[in-house]
Length: 241
Ligand SMILES: Cc1cc2nc3c(=O)[nH]c(=O)nc-3n(C[C@H](O)[C@H](O)[C@H](O)COP(=O)(O)O)c2cc1C
Image (cartoon, rainbow, N blue to C red; front, side, top):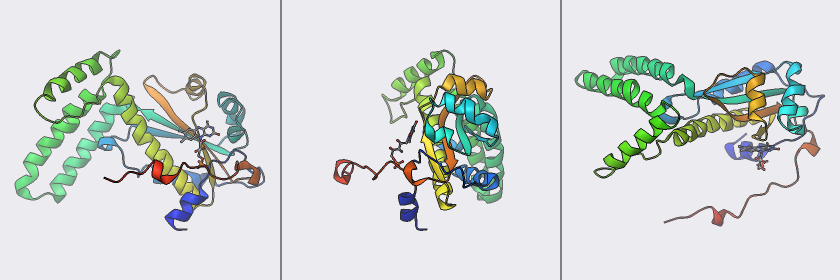
C-alpha cells in the first residue's frame, strides 16, 4: 500500500468483527514501530500498555464510557505519558549520545559536543521536566521572560505546557502505531473518551503519569465505519505565504 492508500484505509472503527482475530505478536510489532516516532528531545517519555487478556474488556469498556469501539475490540493499547521518568530517560540518552559522539564525531569536536550533551541532558532536561506544584514552572517562565528580552527563547516551559510537550510526542507515537496497524490490515480507534482516574487505577499507573489515548484494535465490521469521511475543505486549513 502507498502512504496515501494507508491514510485512506485508516479510519476510526467503532465496531470490530469478533470472528476475525488479530495476532498479539503483530500488534506488539506495531507498538515497536510506534517507538520510532519523532519526539521532543528524544526523551521518549511514553509507555505503551498492550492489553490482550479478555479480562480487561469489561472494566475497560466501563472506563471508556461503554463505547462500542472499546467493547468490541480484541486488544487495546493504552498510550501513557511518563513524565515521571525524565531523569532516567535523560541519563540513558546522555550515555547513548556520548557513545555516538565518541564513534562518529571528528576528534576535534568530541570534547565540545560531549560537554554540550552533558549540559542538555544532565542539566536542561531535568530542569525543564521537573515539577513541584507549578512552582518549578513559574520559575522557568520568569527565567525565559528575562532571557527573552535579549534573544529568542522557547517560552512554553510552565508545568502545564511541559505536560502538553509530552502529550504531543506520545500522540505522534500513537499515530505511527495506527498507521503500522493499517499496513498490517488491522483497524483501530483512538479514544480519549474515558475516565482517566478509573483507567489509571485499573492499570496501577504511578503518580506523574497520564493517559494520552487508548487505542482499540481489531478488524472492522462494515457498520463499524460511520459513513463518509468528513474533512473541512483543504483551503480552510492550508495557507501559503
Ligand atoms: C485524540 C483523539 C481522541 C478521540 N477520541 C475518540 C473517542 O473517544 N471515541 C471515538 O469513537 N472516537 C474518538 N476519536 C476518533 C475521531 O472521532 C476520529 O478520528 C475523527 O472523527 C475522524 O475520523 P477518522 O479517524 O475516521 O478519519 C478520537 C480521535 C483522536 C485523535
